[in-house]
Length: 57
Image (tube, rainbow, N blue to C red):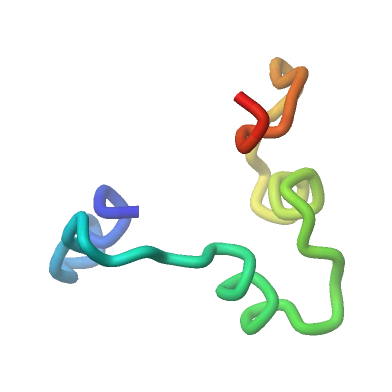
């Protein structure tokens, strides 16, 4: 996320801050599915090489 913030000219998140990306997705897309696969499709992220959810790795 810090790379994206840097591109936007925003300050980096420090290591003592936790970001709940699912909560962010639910606020941004309250009506849609917000699974990892759904978000990848929505934002055009290729996850075809993935065999397990990132949290399981």
